[in-house]
Amino acid sequence: MEKNEKTSQIPGFYKLPIEKRRSIVKDFANLSDQDFNVFSEQMNIDLADRMIENVLGTFEIPFGIALNFRIDNKDVLIPMVVEESSVVAAASNAAKIARIHGGFKTSVSDPIMIGQIQVLDIPDLVHAAEEIIELKQNLLQIANEQDKILVNLGGGAKDVEVRILNSPLGAMIVLHLLVDVRDAMGANAVNTMVEALAPIVQEITKGKVRLKILSNLADRRIATATAIFDREKMGGEEAVDAFLESYTLATIDPYRAATHNKGIMNGIDAVLIATGNDFRAVEAGAHAYAARNGQYTSLTRYWKDGSGNLIGEIELPVAVGIVGGAGSIHPKAILCKRIMGIKSADDLSRSIASLGLAQNFAAVFALSTVGIQKGHMSLHAKNIAMMAGAKDTEIDKVAAQLVKEGKIRLDRAKEILKTLK
Ligand code: MEV
Image 1 (cartoon, rainbow, N blue to C red):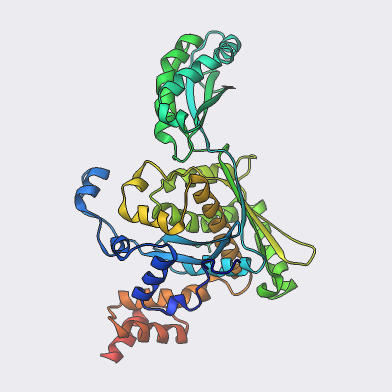
Image 2 (image 1 turned 180 degrees about the vertical axis):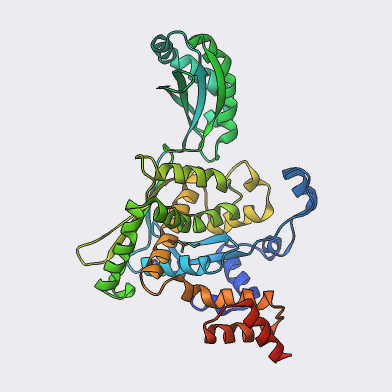
């Protein structure tokens, strides 16, 4: 790290009062008190009412910050909005271990999204497919007329591909429009383009256009992250081997892979929500990508380097935006993006991939050693204590007793609480 560079490594952060934590993050991100006040305020109800239908109110989820991330030689604080205990701590711990060997190194492809146009009842499939390719430039031109701003930014429709698929309804053509969406998630731009092209494609193919919509399998918009997890910090060679044994199950068994990838999405969804992105879209893309070779498998890969350290790698589609969508109007999402210091959707994708890898490493590491319940225990005990009716200082007292007894149960929490009254 260079002298005077800001660090995301803040020892004892979790022990500080919330006000102090806020002030550290505010300084890290060069935000003013006024900027930061947004985090103390509830979302304006009129804004909520404009965002969705039949609004009754807003719904709060805890917002925390993941520490220790060093991504492509720069320290980053990652905002996470998540209801599950241990997720933020686990990511921060993994990032701390990755830091020893320089943190995360990432790559991203161009931000290409795919729009699909489904055409049925085509009299001559091969001829229709040839015609589409022949008229590709015209189609691209018409698509690009729909979004001059995107084109001026260097994006826009770039290519057309034709797929012929068999179905119970007979063979059909699925046209793929490849659109560089720059810093947007891209759904609006792509959907507008494919809708504009639909009648023309129908005419060219002499078939019947049905669906025209973005694909969430954004396999042309891939982010990767790799990191070296220090062998000694993990507890030595045996711990690394135990990790690899546990991980291997996710590579061969969809039952385990689903849980393994769920752990990855624990982190990824949290930052997607914090930045106002469509987490369902990224979830759908990630899981479909995990099954791209015909069997659902792990989104991460691990192996040992020459020194016995563990190398981890994640590769997944990341369809996110920093302009447009809810992230541009939700005040907390706007601030979260400022905390991360992101200037482009690429920057966000790099952090997302790194966080996903960190989250996965932390889960598999815990599972291959002590199991996850130990880490979960104290926070879970606090939740149970609150459910039992404990207030203020009672919460920690009841939780501590539950952990001591190794029984995190509501009935026991109620009994302990009674003894404190
Ligand atoms: C729990 O939310 C996530 C884990 O189950 C992930 C995993 O098993 O790898 C711990």
